[in-house]
Image (cartoon, rainbow, N blue to C red; front, side):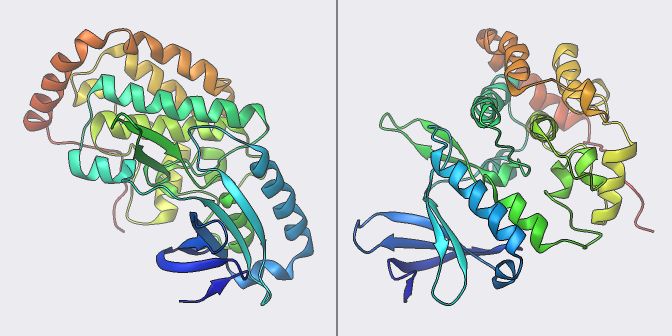
Length: 303
């Protein structure tokens, strides 16, 4: 199907997004498969962006963690397209799991989010902020023992998305349902606490089967992040008050009120990891409450 940068043989197209196209490729010399993101051509027209892109890519090349898809290479093709080549994960996403299974047990939700937080703790310690944590960017692969191993993907690409969508009043950096209030407001100084907020949204979704804020349009969804509070768990779900307090702190409108770090968020969740004998009982309670109480969420009218 052709070569990219004279060394990556295209096997198939994996997807097309706002920042470019992702291909499954094979390195012709190494024989290794990678996920290669070929960026839109417009990025080559801004020298300031290219300088920033190269600096961030170099940082990501040095960032190694078992919970991330490692960036292996980046560069520019002969016809002017920038690309990033990353480890390829052939497995389902957390988005797939939620769509298939709906609500997850408290124990499983905490375990998944704890793994995400460990990855973010390592990234934040090196000054790397993800900016687009969401279930679609959490993948699972099987380890040698046949167990699911979590991988966080797409580090750094939100910076690219910010450049490509500059001036677009609807699409700001991130994915609307998982964006922090400061991202929704278009603030430029996004830090690690935006990732904390997004993880709070993911945990809320795992526990309830739905995101806390969703509306008919992107703009309305962003307004909900800025102005509304999530529906308390007690109104619909048989969940401990303690987990609601933890999630709602992560979802604080003011980033100063959230956990100061991924490590702090991780530590407060470990109480529930220690209560593993409780997991099956509360899973049954969740399923019963789901049948008895239709899920509600903060929303805005269509008009």
